Length: 380
Image (cartoon, rainbow, N blue to C red; front, side, top):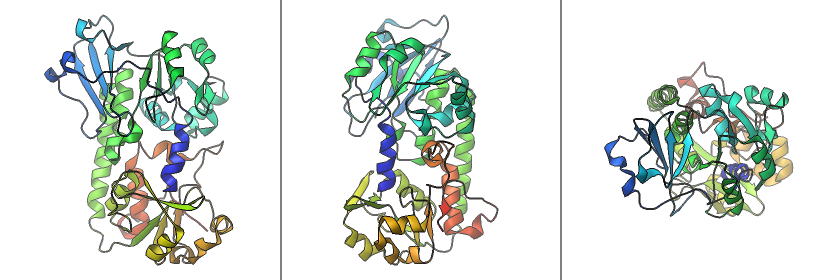
């Protein structure tokens, strides 16, 4: 699915690394004496103790064999000797560098966006609050694409750098750590559950000593999503849905167990590839898509197109689909920030309730008559 492919382009603005301290045997951390604070996320665990917390990243990238353990030390907190092998970070942190736009909403919702002092390629940030900080030169550019600027990061010396990895290989992060900088992996992008992905706000809450606030924010998101899910079940029909678009010579559709597919299911639609196995995107030839989905009622997320004309100019065969002819094509590509960054990429992981409401409004407008579409817009 091109949606997923385009999402991965945002990962190219981070460092891919394996330099953080990690382990595969966690028996000596004695985490069994504390309750995991995380409910839905599969790759995040947070255990709170007197004077410190343990944060474990158990699925930093797909099929990862490594896991990462971090110790968050409160003022005057005493760390057991068995935990001193792990990266220790003093909290609450006062400054941070993040490397994915998906991290921005958590900072803003927690009210700590002013602590963001660096980001790779700031043009991709869309949120108005953070853009004001960029425009006032309070956030430094720290590199582009796969390469973070080591000299700039050493100069601004953030309390922590939060990045992510697509695999376990990147020597640049080793150099940053050898320079004394603290680096943490954030694996939110590997989550497939909408609420699991959103729950990673607790990761940032722990860094700022704002666990209670993060829990409250997530509880509200959970409530909104759950209530909206219940509302969707009142639908009396399930319209057929196509998703994705051509990239080079293949059409990419979200696989049936993926984050995007789960939304379509929860919104009570009949997504035509919902029975496919996997959590990524499935490449298929155009002919296969046309045969199965030519008469689909809706077309959701056809890449980042902003008009039907633009789609037709890209590939005239798009006009062969009934959804195209009937103008039932909805794209996330219209709602953009001041520099062209797409708000869907930035905010949808943290606000799955907004995504679900959009889709229900599209498929079953009678259930949400007063909802105004935010992420998805009808193409004209």
